Length: 469
Image (cartoon, rainbow, N blue to C red; front, side, top):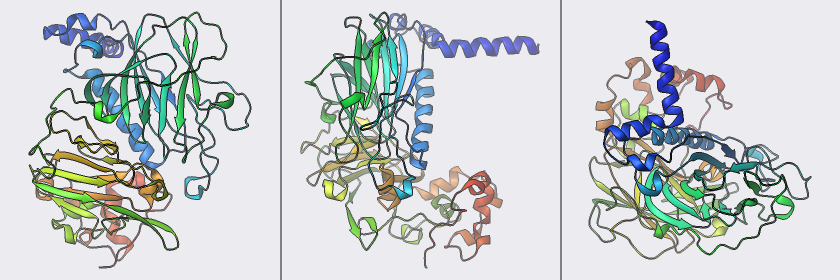
């Protein structure tokens, strides 16, 4: 019996790994059968621009893995371009620094792809190679794991059909370059339809935050056709179809909630920020600098603190009522103030009714996503979501150093509902002392019991900022 069970589990695992199980499920549903005949096999090649893994980067990587799993098992896989893939490839983008993050005084020295890359005036080390076969289609998942810069991503002489942004499917959009901001994710379909040869993959960083340029093969990898010689490409390329966010449209649930005009939501919250140097740099959002509280907001709520004015850190927590349409107007900022900023919201995908580089509103079919570039000084990125997911949700800049110095707020969404949904949490994890800022090390004991491994390995030994009452 045990042997039979093991065999069945092994078979199911193989079906999932190869993608055949998805074909079977869709066939049983009598949908999209022909589209899945393209699915010969699934192959994941992780292409990473490796950098120091901060907590934000690790959270993004975890979410990416979750996204890959969910998409592979989805019962709502779209038709057409979405299903015509031969292979699946993940491309993760970040940087390499030569100093610890808290001490960073320089721009990153190199972009690494699959652990390989070259720096300015460095040696001609090996570059990563992505192998393809002529005539086949590939789904590339382009993921921005950068701690700071954005990337302009291209594959020379190959168009990319965007079908997904931040885990939300989009109507197909053909582009030949994409600006990928920290924390953003895209899925693109690329057909290997060019002559058998070698082509450059470029990931050029934002000029004020990285080291742009391709001299000596920097910021590059190789897109190699089967049968091509083992040499570096000689291709050149000028983009004529860059990705513009306003041209992306949600495939499902496309119409934003609320009324079709600015301010047509139940609650409108402006998100304005500024940077100060007194003497150390810090950001303020609506005149408040976000500092991590000694007791997590979740535990504060679970102990019965529901009013935003009583939640720590004071002024950085916004209470949201349940089942309401929320509109956030996120103001942009100039390069002197660290802009543009990629803002990321936990707990929700949102409708981008106005993009940071546009003055137009789209109340018909904007893109849905969870990370958005807010543009320069004149940017007024406007997003909407519905409060149907109780929890303490972080809204923050995805540039790690900006987050560290306060560029964030927390939404306490339906705190009463949060308590109702978490009645099974052991009461030993909660303490009345957690409601107010702790005055002794013992006050944090319940939380340390909840996350013992975190506190055991926390480089700060759990010593977080304390707040006066």
